[in-house]
Length: 394
Image (cartoon, rainbow, N blue to C red; front, top):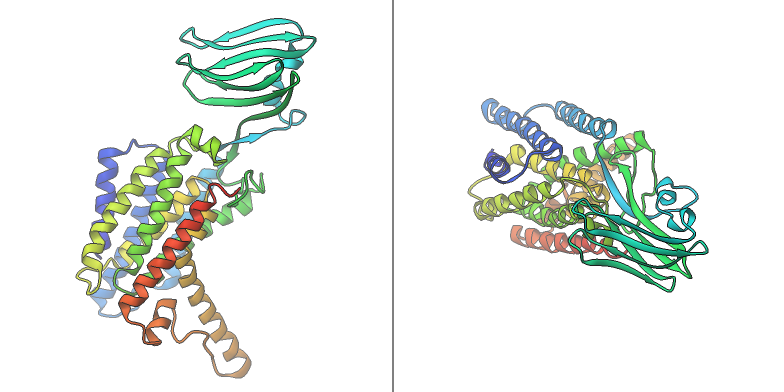
């Protein structure tokens, strides 16, 4: 039940430092529900003096119901991410709206911000852009075209870069702008600049549910050695901290081809709070542990990692960053599946691992508990580096 300490710190930090928005509300709602579910399970084990707790099917029903609610909420309500991508002028309406050379043939045009500073000043001849300059709201230059060659970057009065255009010989050759994408219906993959699927609502909903439920249970399965689950959680939370920070800034998101999510900066606060609370917990949870988080903490922290990844459009990045959790969960599924299959075929169940989850397999091979934990930490850092590499390798 030591997980109550971590969840309490998260809630207090959110109340003190985070600006409440739908992203923060959904995250803390998921944490609270999963924390209560885990607490009830832990309490059942203690009060009934048995290790089984509540039925596994009951826990799964609650987890799937929570994840489905979050998925449908994100799918149906007007919450979305924006991706700064190059658009085809023949297919995407915003390009036509900003296609200056199609709307102007001769003379000069000028536009201003709300503060009366110049937004852009352009000169045309024979339907071509001869020269032009674009500016930020504070008056600094953001782009220039000379003799039909150059780049324009147009900003809104609020300071957000709306689009970027590249001109060659006075003609528009490249137009990049923010394109909205639903957090559920559009599916992003690591190493890809654009969504691989759009309008795939049902498939996206399934992925959201699997991300939240899978992450919650994977962390719970990893919580079998002193300091193992909480240490790996810190590593994954650090990766998500970087991704949430980037997702909250339009310039960084545009530069790194990442989805921009309005309000994601508040998730950075939650990630930082999770890291701080987990470090404090690890102080007493390292071998020999003085406090244990139990299902109360494991289910809640795993679910939190899953929903944050979903809210910034990066569930597959979580799959990479949380590689240790994935290996632990896979070892249990493979062990159970293979045992049932071989028992059905031959009457005698066989096992792939000496014991599952995976960390117990290495314990059975005479690895000391500290060896297993530290080596899994090393794997966790390697997976985290690979996840961060997806920011540039696109």
